[in-house]
Amino acid sequence: MYRPEIRVFDCTIRDGGLMNNHLFDHSFVRDVYKGLSEAGVDYIELGYKNSKELFSPSEYGAWKFCEDEEIRKVTEGIKSSAKISVMVDIGRVNMADIKPASESPVHMVRVASYVKDIDKGIAMANEFHDKGYETTINIMAISKDRGPDLQDALRQIEKESMADVVYIVDSFGYFYQEDIEYLTKLYKGILKTREIGFHGHNNQQLAFGNTIEAIIHGANFLDATIYGIGRAAGNCPMELLLGFLKNPKFDIRPVLDLISRDFVPLREKIEWGYVIPYAIAGMLNEHPRSALALRKTEKKENYRDFYESLTNTGLD
Amino acid sequence: MYRPEIRVFDCTIRDGGLMNNHLFDHSFVRDVYKGLSEAGVDYIELGYKNSKELFSPSEYGAWKFCEDEEIRKVTEGIKSSAKISVMVDIGRVNMADIKPASESPVHMVRVASYVKDIDKGIAMANEFHDKGYETTINIMAISKDRGPDLQDALRQIEKESMADVVYIVDSFGYFYQEDIEYLTKLYKGILKTREIGFHGHNNQQLAFGNTIEAIIHGANFLDATIYGIGRAAGNCPMELLLGFLKNPKFDIRPVLDLISRDFVPLREKIEWGYVIPYAIAGMLNEHPRSALALRKTEKKENYRDFYESLTNTGLD
Image (cartoon, rainbow over the protein chains, first blue to last red):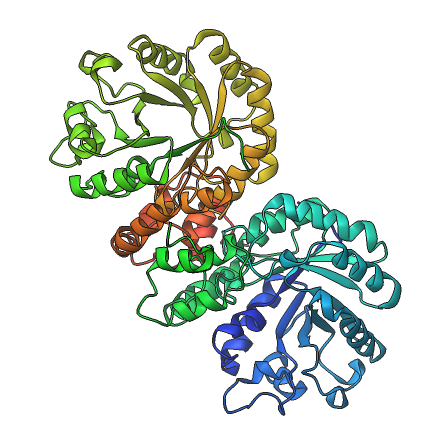
């Protein structure tokens, strides 16, 4: 697939950090930034922009806060044409801390919002836009909310927001490719002046296939992570996405190096990927939190009980 | 997806056995057969039917040969509505050993054939048909051979063979869903009197997504294996396929039990699944043999060198 409008968006540190409280050390993040820059990805998301009044820096790593000076430490001196992104959650940012884009190493701010919070999401994205950032609105958990409310939210975004990109987010790893076709067409039909993005989760090994499906139907912003790292089942693997995209500006080899050196050993310490309780949560359209909790108990491999607890089938 | 014509075809022991010379002991195979029968799958493939003159029983397990008496040992006394299948390769069967279907526990014989060998494949499938077996022709490695020769082979099968089912086989785990759409339509257009099957390999985490794609376009015979076990990257995971199919005759829970008890521990001893050299081989449309060989060396995690060796990009 060669389409010049396509943007490859890495969220290795941001989504991967959900599995270790963003406690990646600076040399690791610097290596990741350098490798991804060599690979030619378009955006690199380094974490969340959270207020330190809400989360303790003694518990969470630097990438939970993404202060400008920390970002500079891992990027300065590295040749890169990638833009830097951070993600924000509604109600967790102190806007007084946010400098204008012209004074920050950050290029893009992505606002994560549920359908029900879309008013706040639009307002927040517009604030960042006014400060000079590229912005996106990432509508989360829409597998629970695909009806008229989603369509209203999309119309409101088109009318009221300045966001450059609006994302389809398969938070629970539930969607099959027919769903992605439907949603991409729905988004494109309403959001006539915006780019469409796709962020998959890999519970059912469909994150890559669904990303291809989104591309086919016109999504141009594609999220992926190195070796698929991310919360629970993780995300679309960057190495597969780069293998699919035929644009010669991408080079898979620096990503292969990072996997060999850093991510195969890291997978021994942090669990992400195809793990049956995550697959079960995905196929049942459930948040992975119960599966994540299960994996910390002695019953971690007791899949039948977990399935029955989510479906109430244990008594039949 | 609910379509009564759909048949779920398990090939756990047959394709998984390619990773351990089919050295599964009888109690393991019996457990698998019992669990799959409880899950309601339609066919269970227990291995290959090979001549003992070609492969040594001291080197290979019983499921390399699938003698009727061995099959009876693992199936007798177990309530099951599943049919039993074996696979055959051209030139590796002594037809004099083959009893009529009425005297055998085997219901179906699947003939694996390359496009170039299709004359022999048709003749062999017809011989098994004449002995009373259901038959399929599984056309292998068609990602290397999608041109007029494939279409000629399909026309010849439709005209000359008695095979009930003809399979699309993604031997190298190369195909994206557009390819599956194209091939399923091609097969259906030519093979008007046959069912279409799909057998994926999971090199690029697309075996399940491609199986869904094949279903959408009309394939009714769907191969899968427990926990995705199979050669190299393995196959479409049975648990995901059962989660997708909404037919109430299937029950995912016995498969979850088998994974908990047998397949998670087995994965510690035999490597299959998402391993980067298998992914690289898949995206480059290469047989996995070089990746399988690499995994037995000290360079097993040296992905860049492997990629460069397959693409000759090391010198640029």
